[in-house]
Amino acid sequence: MSAEWALEVFDKAPYITVSMAGEDGTPYGLPLSVVRTDERTFWFHCATEGRKMDILRANPRVFLSAVTRCKPLRGPKDSSFTLEFQSATAVGMAEFVEDEVTKKEALRAICRRFLPKQMEGFEEASSKSLHRTAVVRITLIEPPIGKRKQYDANGDEMKYGRME
Image (cartoon, rainbow, N blue to C red; front, side, top):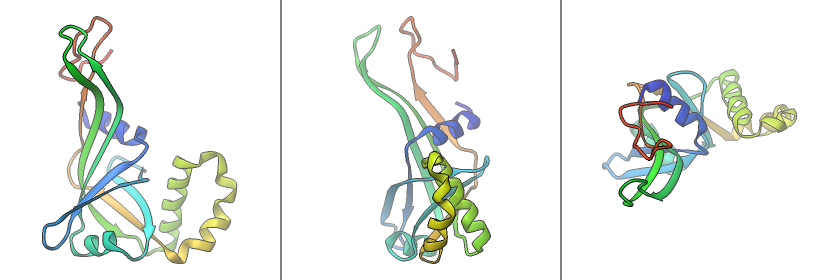
């Protein structure tokens, strides 16, 4: 599927798993509340200390993955056990945001995505917690990849980016 399609999967996913590797190569991944603000930029917030922060300081390269529309089913034509899904992956570089204006804008974008009807409390809440909240910007270093398994109304698998 196209990079644009993959970005839409990221936008629809309830969370995005951010995976990284420690200095010794040990993998570490977490499902996070991530928001995308353009074709290459993703943001998340977290505590200012902890394992994730230590790993990102040592190795800022990350892998993003998201899955939506998961539906176990029997194959329409062959009765196989299968799963319909839409997925997206991407590789990026993480950096810590220190500028308070950028930090607040990123937090606003995160809140708009996850709590759009409660934005009236954003200014007060962000002012109280800005000093103890880390914001991480992830910039993609290659186009995202999208994959899916989906059947049409006739039970044929929609391959090679075929859209209905």
